[in-house]
Picture 1 (cartoon, one colour):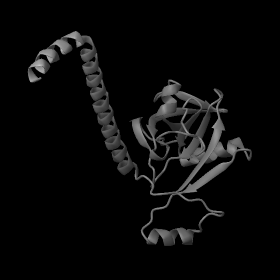
Picture 2 (cartoon, helix red, strand yellow; picture 1 turned 60 degrees about the vertical axis):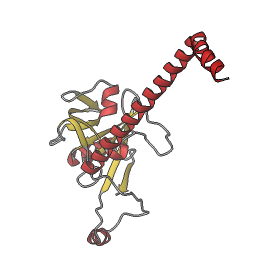
Picture 3 (cartoon, one colour; picture 1 turned 45 degrees about the vertical axis):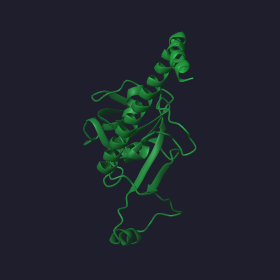
Picture 4 (tube, one colour; picture 1 turned 30 degrees about the horizontal axis):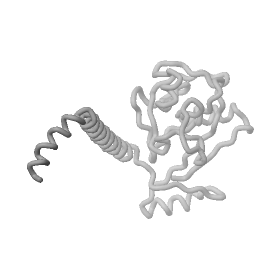
Length: 206
């Protein structure tokens, strides 16, 4: 019986050599894809963790029926909590997309720049990199918002919008329709005032 098997195995391999070769190729391709995905996932995890540390990523956020008083906020900070009020408002652009405007953060979920610098004076802003890539914008370009023009001084991202989506009900991001912009505190207040009472401002505590 053993002798028959020894004679038949080489003959079977040779007869079905194309099938076995194809199966070996599929196994090799599968192993390559799996190892590549594992490598990408590991690299992404390292980058994300580094950004979380650099940006002082939030441990959580909360909303209230009325803002905390200075005394209440001070009491929480004395217990070791870091709190920052994050203000924002949305503005529809001429291209049909929505830009969400923020003041540059000072404590939590800090803006991480890929290129350029933070806005330092009136008429400067930073755009999120996904929105900038979609519309071919880069540092040094000018973007018009209503009657005002702003110089793009930087391109970056924030960890609380690592997948820019307008609301929690959005299951995926679409940077063609939604993006982020960061202004100086004075420019934020000026633009909000120019847009008038029809523009709603949101505030989140972190």
